[in-house]
Length: 202
Image (cartoon, rainbow, N blue to C red; front, side):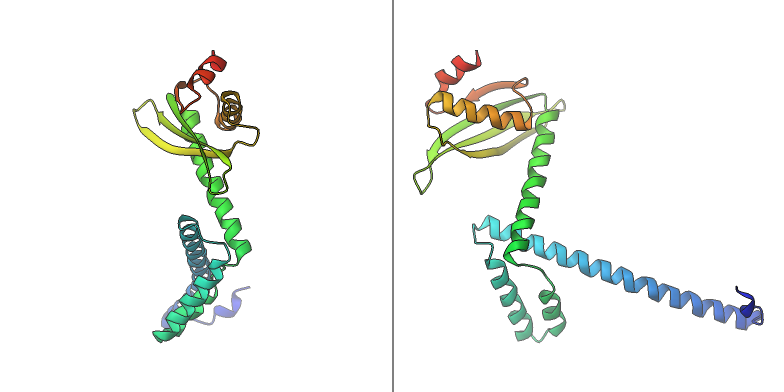
């Protein structure tokens, strides 16, 4: 297949090889640049979604942020940056999907920490939200075999059936079963339902 190149010898052959090698590198760079741009767009989208969640903003605000970013880039005369901003996906469906993916990622990391810890303890608090609905807030502190300590908000669970000690325990039991078991639990601190929980656990 390469007999057509046999006529090239010496310096002309080296020059041809150099030219072909340069063309191959440029072709590879086209695909590499596309991958880098896609990765940058994805990172930018996740960063905006994270800020929306931190500030408790609506998922539809992603499109507003995108329009503002484009207008700012155009105002500074940076057309290239404005074009890049236009390619970042921030529709409310995309923001919702990104937030769910980040939530699953955090839950997975927390589940791994709990399953590999030596001991853990829980702190529970029941309070009402702005709609006067009862919510169970669960914090967890873990320690592993290397004495690394992690403190995290485990979950916020609506208490639909009631706020009695047994209701709190049933909600807690369901959440803990999703992350592991009570085997390594060394203590539970509650506000107002301590005796009920102690009785049920015994």
